[in-house]
Length: 379
Image 1 (spheres, one colour):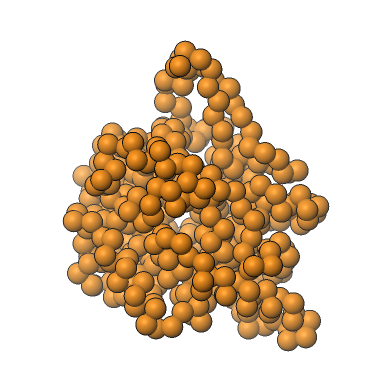
Image 2: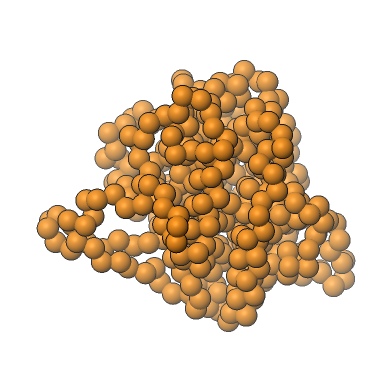
């Protein structure tokens, strides 16, 4: 009953020591008013909605403002690394230096403080809940920073990568939650981010010592074996295609071409891609969102969205597909005509119809896609 109190589980609002998800109690009356998507200090970003008007023309400044403010608000308010917001900021924003200029080092400093905290945590506690995800995104973010901002491997990135592999399980992946797709629902997703972190950090793989790092070499082989055999849906296969660009030995050329064709087969008539076509409702995590997804009005014909369109173009470009490929150009056309007034690209959450945090990656990935296709000016 709507007049009864309901409980909202907030994904990723964890501080150490790690614990179960925190719960916030609200009344039904309070839940009717749309809360800001992000709010902290002077930052207040309105709720994300499919009803938000589209911009008449692309605004890189609006997109940048959204990316900077939302990440700062999350870090400031929650004091943790989340895959969907500041984790995405650190894994995407450094590569956007070409178009947006070098990022401010405030988020990197936050990640370094998190590294100190996570490295001091009891390893058994760090294996629980979102602990592995936080460490993996920590390592991946620092690796991207080194690759695109400083151009050299830092001691902190090396430490984060070693901490990441210390949490790896015997089968080659990491422990994960299974309830918040697509980010915090799938061990395979985290494994692809770990592979990209190791493959992106400048010189890290090449400089591993054959004797001192023999254990790490074994863990890397376990990771590769896991990625080659465990993808269960096309979203995971898309991430594998992207990962292969950073760790090319993950697949043979024939398999790579099959994944490229698979991804193009998902392209919608309007030129975009839809996250909802990439896996069956029951295949997302534990399947706990299947009922919600099947009940959506456009279940049979889901709309294109910013997250999947951006991700598809980025993965295809890194796989070697030319930026002037007509199919890529159709995808860029969708991006250029579907930015919202706030600077975001709309992406409906797979989880709930409240915060829609996936509009964050649904904005970062489109900007990266546009840059990779030469559609943005250079700073």
